[in-house]
Image (cartoon, rainbow over all chains, first blue to last red; front, side, top):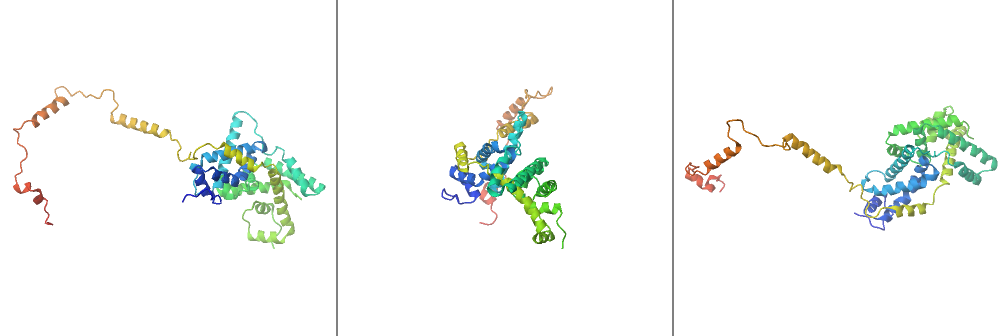
Length: 194
Length: 156
């Protein structure tokens, strides 16, 4: 049965079906449901400045590829994969052109951390938290590429292990191993974070 | 009771990986180990929050995405242009034709010396067939002329 326009409460597969048939409202609903995840993923790969535009590119690309979506898969994983591929394409293109790729680590997170911390803790505590988060960023930047990627997808994009495995086309055991190594290394390097 | 957690066990707990029952039990009962895991998890969460503080205006993003959608039905995947298919078909046909010798520039076969040509043989056959003096097939059993009888298998 083909869902109708009033069925925006439907699951993703039904919305995909509607969007495939040209229902832009249905696609708008899919965007609203998944844009945060898509943006967060892009944010990890291309940095804050470009995350929004690359996220938009990914969402538009997803629309044009809706026909190839296999409804047996989870839409969120499928669209995450599109976002990752869009980011990697951009990074490769930038490298070919000899342009610098802005690392997600050095694009001014600290200002935001200051802002968040200021609302929550006392000045001394804020200072300590800023230092701790700064050290966390350094450790993160020092991780091997794959570990860093999986760490960020797990904790910042809040993807579960199976989703990461599917999105990166690796075995879930690989995800577990790399994630464990990443967190273990951070724990060792950060020492007592209190 | 289990000793304090190793850094590997703390890492596994923070990462949300499977941990042994004894580790889980220790975490429930040991304030120091629990604090160690929650502090690291809290630090990661603080960084995530900081990143999210940077998030765009979602409603505006949705509008911008919808404005950028191509018009028409989003069926690219279903109507994907497979330009190589006709090319492949033509190439396959050409290979088969070459294999069968159909594309040779000169397809005429000269008969060996002394042998009649195809055209001569066909003309000879035509002549034979048009000669009414050659006896044809005759129905030698008159019963066979009656096809009903011929095909009667006893059912009628």
